[in-house]
Image (cartoon, rainbow, N blue to C red; front, top):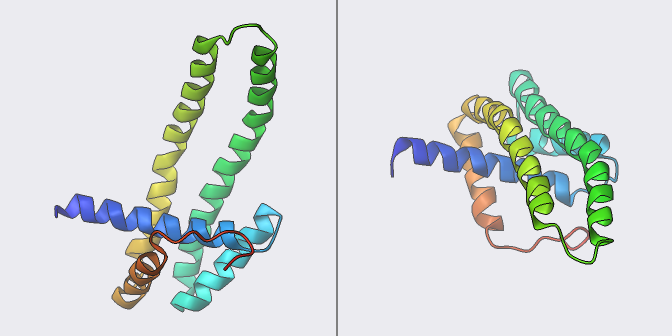
Length: 148
């Protein structure tokens, strides 16, 4: 496998790990959930202070993207509901909404991936191995909130 493909898979895996911890936590507030994840990952991987800062950067990028997405979601929902009041669906407008969301995600993705890459690169070989093991153990599993 090419080095860039391996690197991309590992970064995506790290994002999956952080994201799954965030999604599976029992905390309802995103900031509290993120803090819980930071503590849990920090303990599991035995992170030093520098690594904890890098992980916090990943969390902050994800939270910032989430906030921006949430802010836009209300407006998009209102527009979609207005479109559904019409006798026929304006497909071009719906597609435009989707493309806008996709573009927003594409604009934020490089910052998230860069933060995740910096975090992953700052890990020891053993810590990276723990992340890969976690991903392998949870590959294909259907973890649902409250059903761990």
